[in-house]
Image (cartoon, rainbow, N blue to C red; front, side, top):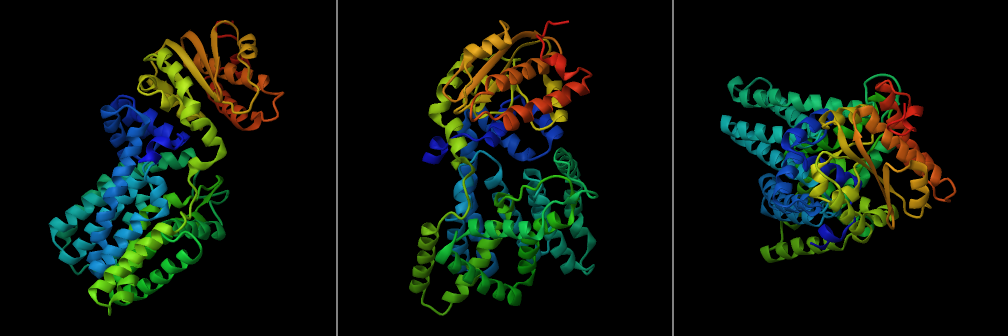
Length: 510
């Protein structure tokens, strides 16, 4: 697929690749500390053992996107027959949201795949009511939670539907596999709390994560990304979904309730929970609902085509597939921004990645997660890369460093910014090696760097020098990139009881 190779590398993909490139023990320790998607990091770790490149983690998404289609066909067939299954498969295959994240090196297509599998096995368990079917559905539910924190919404929807249908009328022993799966989900709940704490999410104080308009907008954009995009094509899919919803409420209330709960739980929670952080209500977080939505559309199409001959039904399914192909994506590819196109393109990364491969050694420390480091795999995978979000994750990541550290590297994206190597060398001194490329500035702080404070101090010196050197540039990101990173690092240094002002001095200064 051209998108796997040609699309620019994105910073979020660098997080996946550079964490997964470490030894497995480090991967697990990092995931435990930061929260997130442990199953995808482990899968990325395995992929990078086969092909240590940025493309490897994108091929995971491609494989999951392809596997999602037949699972949705089976899900639709199970709910409303073969025509519904065929339309569900074509709806997913032509989804704009899946098309984008199907070549994106993150966990979203894996999330959609395991959610579809979990929903399919859940419906099978509802029909068969056997311990074996419940065990299979419970194992799939566990996997959903292991892939993404939002998996809790999918599993919660299943649990509510199951409890409503059970109401104590079935033998309790059949629920034992579900109870064991719930117990096995506890570690993931801890991980999710760690991730929430990173973004200051709480249950009291502050303001709501999102207003009703924000939450509804997330649902709207997700539905546009699921199928139809906008305009006439969106109207077609919404009409089919309306018919499908009507049919399901009358014939499969269990599935209708499951879909409604899965789609509405997350946006509703964002309105009710109180926090001081800003929300990231992206349609990609609701991709686990895509399989359910495709079945609702498929059910509507099956009802509309029910009285037609088989040949006409086939023509109708084909026509809907064509409509899906012609429909706009409905969501924006995060890699399509001008900034990402400049700093993450193959042309921008080739030369600095080549220099990094010849320079970085195992035991070095890189700051921060950046596409230029991802492009330099596998050599940069032997080094330790630090996050840039908050002080605590940075300090925790440094627990994996082997001091004294030989060298530390700092990557500064600098498209259109007057950052000259000569000026940086004059500001930093002889212990720093500065390389200026077309859109990247790479600085190597030569050690030995004997402690966390000394290493972070060297990184702060680089950012301070870059900030000062860029002051005359009309596009100097002093308040965004330099300001944010320097502030976070200074907070980490204060935790280590070293004033940030001293960090601006050379590492061997008294």
